[in-house]
Image (cartoon, rainbow, N blue to C red; front, side, top):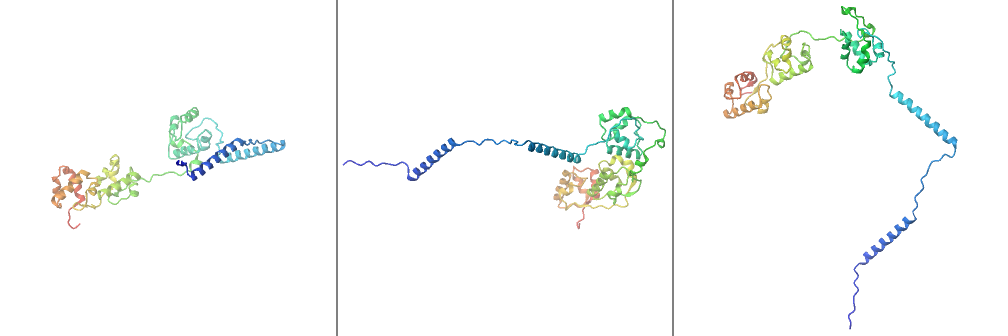
Length: 307
C-alpha cells in the first residue's frame, strides 16, 4: 500500500487569524484614502457693508484706547529745551533743566554749590556726573562765568539752595583709646572711614589686642594717614588674649598675623620634640623665626601649664 502524504501547515491557527486581520486593515485603509476629500478652507466674507464699517470703527477705538494707556504708562519728557547764555554758578534748577540737564543733574549742581563748590571755567562742567561729550558740546557756547574776587559776591538761587540739606563733616581731632575704640568712634578720626575702621577692629581681634599704638599702622592702608592718625590714639594699658602654645594647633597658630603657616608648623613640630614648651627661648632653635619675629609674637604666647 502506498503511504499517504501528510500535509504540513507551516502556520498555526492563531497566525492565520492574525494575517487575515492585517489584510482587512490594509484594504480598509486603502478604501478610506481613495474616498477622502479635504475640507475647503473657510474664508471670512462680509455679507453686509455696515457690519464691516462697524468692525473697522471698533478696531480704531481700541487702538486709540491702547495709545492713551501706553502714554500714561510710559511718560516722555515734555520739557521744552531753550538754549541761552547761563552762568553755572548762578543758574537755578529750572534754568538748568530747560537747558537740557536732567533734574537730578541740576540737583547735584546745586548741592555742589551749596557745599562751597564753584565753576571757575567752562571745562569744569565736564566733571558733572552724567555729563556726556555731546551734551557738553551743546552747552559750551552758552556758558558764561562771571569773574569774581570773592565767593560772597556770587549770588545763587537761595530759595532752592536753602531748602537742600547742608552736609557737615563730623570729623574732629579727638583722643581715642585704641584698646577699646569701636568702629563708630574710629570713624570720627580724620582719615579713617568705615572700611578702615572695620579693618582696625578686625586686626586688633586677630592679634589678640594691641601692645603699642604703632601697631595700628600695620593695618593695610593706614600707613598713608600715619601722620594724621597716630596723634589721635593712646593705649591706656596692655590687655591681650594670648594663645597657649602647648594646646593650640597649627591652623590656630597660622591665623595669627605674625606667623606664617610654615612657622606655625615648625613651632608645632618643636612642641612634639620637647613634649611641651616652657619658655620663649626654645623658639630660637627654629631657623624660620628671626629674632624680630619672636619678639613680636612673644606677648601673644602663653606657656602656663594651667591655661
